[in-house]
Amino acid sequence: MRKTYPIDRFQSLQTPLYYYDVDLLKNTLGIINDEINKHNNFIVHYAIKANANPALLRIISNAGLGADCVSGGEISIACQTGFEPSKIVFAGVGKSDWEINLALDKGIYCFNVESMAELEVINMLANKKNTVARVALRINPDVDAHTHANITTGLAENKFGISLTDMNDVVKSAMKMDCIEFIGLHFHIGSQIQDMSVFKSLCERINEIISCFEKAGIIISDINVGGGLGIDYDNPEENCIPDFKAYFDTYSTYLNIGSNKRVHFELGRAVVGQCGTLITKTLYIKKGTNKQFLIVDAGMTDLIRPALYHAYHKIENISGGGPKELYDVVGPICESSDVFGKDILLNKTMRNDLIAIKSAGAYGEIMASQYNCRSIPKGYLSCDF
Image (cartoon, rainbow, N blue to C red):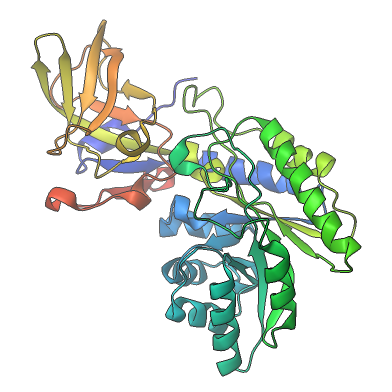
């Protein structure tokens, strides 16, 4: 079903802009809660790096989700928009001292620690504050997520996490530190994963690791499996909400949880990806030798995914209704990579027609830059129209 947009209102606003469908976001959150409520020990933390629009964060925090943060700035905005510190987890390979101190002062639930060096610093800083930091060690499970190389995080050659060969030594060190409370393990193998067999493979690897620790008398109370659940960029209208049932059921079926373990999820794209659309205006139609270029006022500064990952986003002319024509949809940035899509079939497009670039709720507005001294696009909620 084709989404309807407040086109007249868009015409009066400065483009490019982000438009967020609040009803879709709330429906998505409702389904997530329905599914995790079937499992007493499942906890979802929204990955703020996907989209930190404050209005969206308030909706997500009001739905009861926790927050997954990867910077001090994200911890701050999470607290400002209603997320409970006791539901905040803090990941990242390069946590600065001020970020660690902020997290300690806020009393977050857990640090996801990615190296022995980081563990030592957290212990030192916690000691200075006469407090104890809960930590989960991020383990690199060497599981292939079968996704784009730039968003794969669980292979041995990636920078993330502690290797399987170093895992035992780091766990033993953590348990000896005075200001560290070792509570569990953290995993995250990548993003935009839609094949549930990948998550099954992760479960099997986690089971092996947990079994080894428990045989050695080391109790793991918290298992953080990260996120990674993808969305359907090809058919956003038909599949506007990911299959959360299959996702959570995979972990319930294949992860040896027991009644005494908490399982944490860090979902970002799956929560907000489909609710956001980048709205841009047609500047020119340029006839090339063998191409027809549709030049819009949005660029890679506003949505970098196509340039960075060669990512596909469905594109639609929401103004015109003429016969279909082929276009390369490109932006105004002085870079050859500033392309949203090549050979895109759209209704015949004219100057000032509005173009919708869909499934842009995740890693869109949050990754916008001011390259070429451009302004950051504003975000608008559907409920405000």
